[in-house]
Length: 210
Image 1 (cartoon, helix red, strand yellow):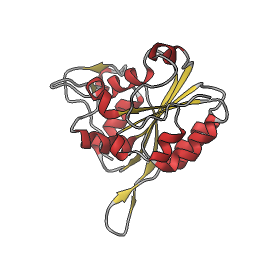
Image 2 (tube, rainbow, N blue to C red; image 1 turned 45 degrees about the horizontal axis):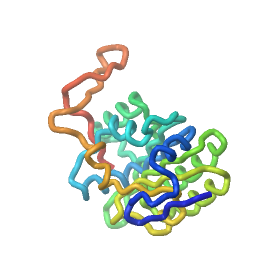
Image 3 (cartoon, rainbow, N blue to C red; image 1 turned 90 degrees about the vertical axis):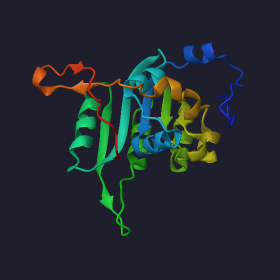
């Protein structure tokens, strides 16, 4: 298996970009919601999740797109966002936030991401992992030995070298931010009174807050 471990996201692979896309086969997407949220903050953008799904799929056959996040059951805005995600192409995997001694709240979903990546091996050919967490490097290495090609998408300054080193392809979020950010006054609102779950514009689209 050939790897492209370039830390700067440059394409020095023996494959052309066109060949890479042709060889992706069936794609499964695994998004670390908290990691992506903080990466977007660093970039100063707000993610458009419809654009994100299109960009990560890039015309390939999509098996499923998983979005992993901690949840605060009392946060109505977040609940609205997750409802929108479920109705617009994402399988949401959530875990209740746990309050830490310093008063902050956190939920770690690394185990859930790793288990799902392993459990679905055989059903997909390429995994797109949106996370920079080095704790996932072992899982990425494990699925690669099972024949899966792994693409890691994250902000370079927030990405562990150990994760990049086991990926077949690394994409810096900074290099694709124009393709995945919201444009001014663009948004989607789920209107439950429509009865059939239509997505309508141009209300403010629910935003993600971990």
